Image (cartoon, rainbow, N blue to C red; front, side):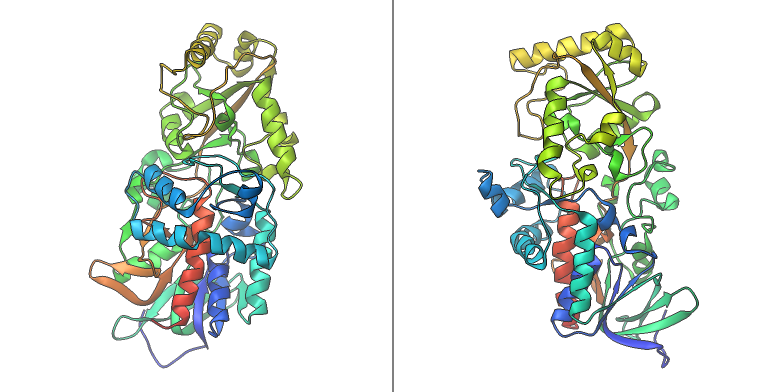
Length: 471
């Protein structure tokens, strides 16, 4: 779509998407003096992916960690991100995140975001660095701060196209609200922060036909809008070959409230035949792919009373600052109601419909490995990544949480540089920036927990500052 003389409205910076990335971009753009508007195609503030996620953000070197006696640093975070991404991630993007993550933590705290006094260990971490906040409250605070700085945030307004001039610079957008289609000029730049494509059957089918119809717990507006608009301008995509579902959603669930990561506290995961099929300490994206290959695509977390008690304690420690359903490494009342419980492993097998003998032998073999210091089946050495000692599953009663793979995020998309400019094979698209789940290149081959929301906030800030400069 190209330039003509007709504009319905004009701003310096136009942001598409009012999640964490888009609102962070708006705050920084407005702070830099740019007249800024945010268009969100969904109708409500709580419909963004940031607002409905579990609230975990990966930060290193915080005061929360210091009070807990956890030594961490930006450099350790950098190394962990590259390691879990199998060095398929773009180092300059990883460095941009780690260089600015602690400042962003303080930026959020100063605006009023509250953090639970816990730091959780999850996928890819060599230190516990999962910081929890109330995600909806965070989005409300970001919106408030954007508007306080003069930005306009409009809902039920979908950016449907990009407008370019004769030099192929992005100079505006086409926007559709409840009534009209309008052309909005962006004098300095456009930031795409419309999320991923977990709700685009066509894109998922092109990657793996098994992904079509899979549950998605991301924002309902995540249909790949940014990719659809930017690709015709020559935008390059990154990490599409690494798109994988996550494993952790209860078989009856459809939201983050049914996500459970009790395997990172010591549970094992078995299939419908009662057998383990994976090292439970690896990232849940990789467990998600392994689960897809099991009967009915189901993996059942099996654990005992010790692990149950620890999970309940995790919830108790964190829920003073955040909703209990956001403590995915714990068990709240709603998740406890989803558990199958039994006094013996054999009775537990009956409860989840797996062969008694196979499940009993699986648990005994695992316990023997824990006692001997070696998981002989899958080489598990820790609870999560390189954190935590393995524990036997031996203290009754026993529990099971039946779970499936789902799309929490797609972790791939538009290639950007460390200024968040959208890249082409020959350079970048002038006037166009992107941040959040819309981009690729940051995560690489797998996923470090908390880094998705983290990079959305950090990279959104960078994108907003750069767009405001009109570069």
